[in-house]
Length: 491
Image (cartoon, rainbow, N blue to C red; front, side):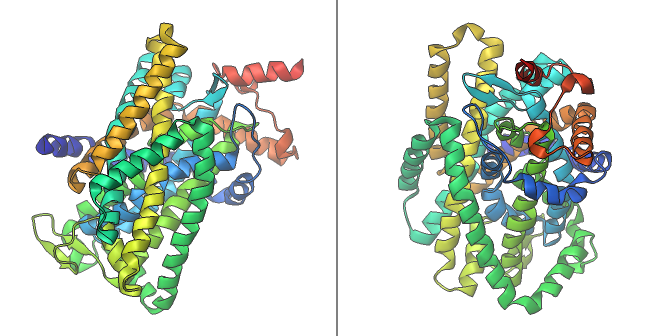
């Protein structure tokens, strides 16, 4: 079983997907005239300007919900894995894919707003919706929804719960069986409350834990500030094979950096658009800009915090790809959150393991919450498209089955080996990325039209709160929600 999983992972995450992620990021960066730089101030303003309604959540709540999905195991265990398999240079490629990926994140989240629907009193949308409506390919939308349901409901939760269990077991010696039961009970209380409860929980947990974690990293960096120039030099030299110790693994450095970057910030993967569609905004580009900024928060802030803690303290190993080590500072320590725990522990003996375990608990737990919401959105989409006769009570039963199954996946993930959990997670991320990136490239003109329209209205002095999105004027078809909204406003 493990052999099949590892081989499938190699096929999906071939150099073709790594290249596709980089090309898509470059393409959207140039098409938007590097909006991720030009509009960075606007992104900050829009974070707190959104409104809520009975149907939708605020831009900030949508940001926190998508960040809940982005900030998780990838920021702690994933960074450690990137360094272990690709050396310090992998961090540069995580930064690169984050910067370029902000363009992809803008496009996918803008498209999710353009083609969202109001269903059962809530806004819903995502890649399956914009694939069907924007490209006119219902089969493609169904395929994405099926892949996403499997990835979010079966593969990815295990990565998060596995890291939680490993971190807490290492720090406090708590049985993984007990950890699994507690996680399942806590998750059940939240996911049975729907998007409102999920976004409310994310809005409280994500900013607090993120700030505390970054603060810890800053303290370690400031105390060891004399090492920072050397660490930055090592990262850049290793990224291009100029550091002799890591020159032999340059291919792995690039591939692992891009893979872990995509896993962490999820730009182009197709997860962020689900929360983006739930936001209450008066122009799709607003949420696109907010979500572009979330990529920076995830990778440039949180991932960098982990990387600098590990590299400054020297608490890491680097594998040579053939069963040995180029650097072995932690003999016998498994790749994952233990690297980060050892880093903080070296700075504050006896405190690191507990601190990282708690941080990982909050980060990964909120990520699982976001995974559930994404899985539910795609399940509802499939039910509407394939089993439309089973709406109402039938749909509620199917959703409750998903909730129970999700809880089982979380509990089971606590028991998997880390390598198997990560490989399954990578398969889920890679399959979604293939389908979504191709779709947003094909729909790129629609996303660019939205950005130009938003920037035009801003340029001629229309206040953000008075902006109007008119898809008919822009030549965008099947944006039914916005057409109906315009008709309703003119009555």
